[in-house]
Image (cartoon, rainbow, N blue to C red; front, side, top):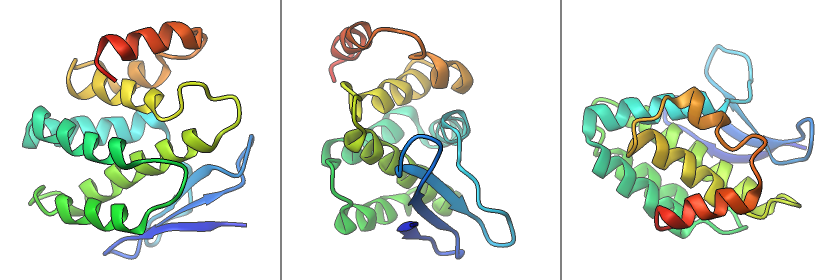
Length: 161
């Protein structure tokens, strides 16, 4: 059964629902379009575009606000805070709200998945690679595939998270 995460100003809807593996699959429905599950590389691409337009430091700092506040429970106050700081992305308010909310939902899902020893840090690694290191979004999205979690944990720790 679908669980609403957030409805956006244009009527777009973000939800958790049953996916191929668990009930933590994230689905986005845009007005007039079919519901789909956004891929990491897609929202990493949008995040990289925001960083190019508004600054990597600002974009990363806003992500860290979300990262630090993420635990296992959907937090309405954090969703409102994301919408509030998204106003700073003046020409891209809706895009920023959707992207940061997608990242939040992805981290929330990681925190709730069984057998996910890195939890939300796996998304942090991808965001850091894309925003601060300039890695291509598709490369960052698949970077962790097949790597032992201990290696990924060391990479995260080396970057300070």
